[in-house]
Length: 231
Image (cartoon, rainbow, N blue to C red; front, side, top):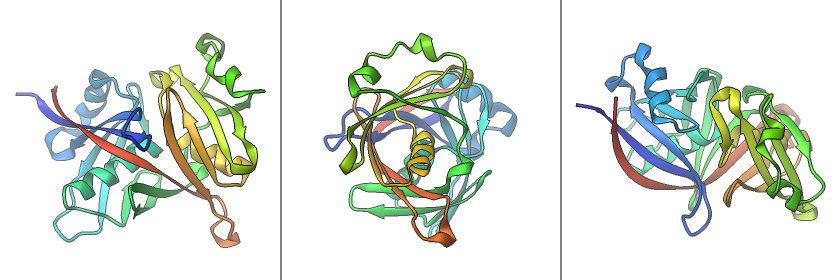
């Protein structure tokens, strides 16, 4: 019998469209040595394995895998898992991943996580002249590293159009990348609303207080796409 994998889409628009698929797996169902292979088989940009919290607990522990490597932190898996736990009656306030402890929030239909920008993988942030240039970009021109290309759609309002390519992580193009959103928010030092990929929406908030410098909150909407069997 295969392993049951819950699938959610993270960073949808307000109608529940678009978003980045995420596999959520109960850690107890898969031995640590087998988790990378399962993530590779599933093929999602990330799969997250969670030690399910007990009823009444406000924290959980999780590990994150791309199809090729384990990551210490990523945005769309931590947002998606936090929503998934709340949807199952297990809301949390903190999430422990290898990079550190993430603060979790639930604000209306948005699920948010707060993390340090330097926990995110490195990306080459490349500003293009227009949103059309981003839309028309050829992924083959960005195949040597993790590239995050972007352009302003409305700079005064902090609205951005973006795409992300990371073939070395096993992700030719990512539909919505929370970690890259954290990086660009920290780089620009301002709150952003990002439209990535085909239409996914990511919200970020930059911390202005000196004592929390380097922290960014990233959030969005999540929908449940059911379960699949794998392994």
